[in-house]
Image 1 (tube, rainbow, N blue to C red):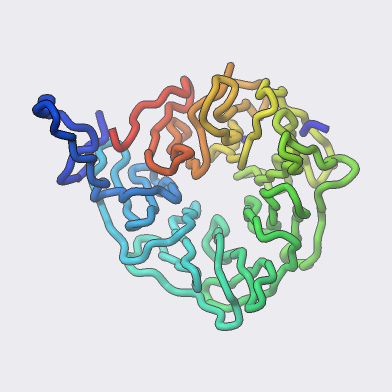
Image 2: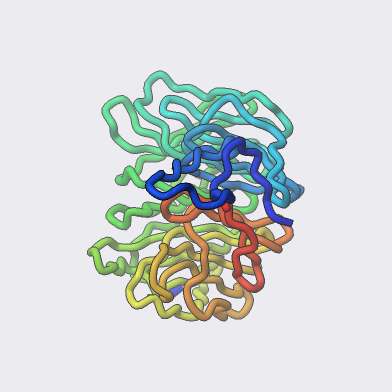
Length: 344
């Protein structure tokens, strides 16, 4: 079944040597990690005004000017997951807590539940009033918590059968997708007011479609302005838009991936584009981009769009991290060419 100027790094050691070849028999010393980004990137997200980009890595979380690479702010904590809300709320997780930076704040608030064993991912609503977090309880069982950020309290918990949980709120914050991205469990859409499931996948309309590893791919994401519109992918060539109110399904043009998987999906800020992340390698790999109004595939082959992808608020560029986690790419949203790659 089918269903969105060179960046100058502030580094004391260059990533690529510009010096003349060294004397014969002398080995060149490998470059040191960038002082701006560290040695492995874990998440990216544009600030709402589009002038800066948050980049989380194993070394630190920084806010940079994505056009010049100037470090604007460096934060004390190092979250292993990053999400930036439309209102400017920045959230992340460490092993035992969620971190919340209110808009413009330099210091994070910690959300902590002593009955939990581990925190994985978190995401805020567009207005910054709620946060959803995928966590494990003290015995390691997976669940999702929904927090009231003003009160810093858990409103309720959602049971899940998967440890691989991706989370998306809809446009008005009334629905939450709990997406099993491993493909081995169940994906759910929750009504947060009624506190009940309104959609479960796989189902008759969206069956489990295995990839070449035997995993059943299920990736979901809500449209950023239409609260009822959901993008669903169930296989490497099966992606559609699904209207929860009407039940209408709009298939998107099938990409030729030769069986290579597509990963998490992302809408542009206005919802006019949908991107499915890919992996690196042959030409049929890489990400795919669709026009959501027509369902037309805008990429002839694989585009350099991978995990940890963020759209500029105006839709002009995208930021993404290479599959090895070592480089940040700024990609033109029309031509899908890499404008900058860092480290260079």
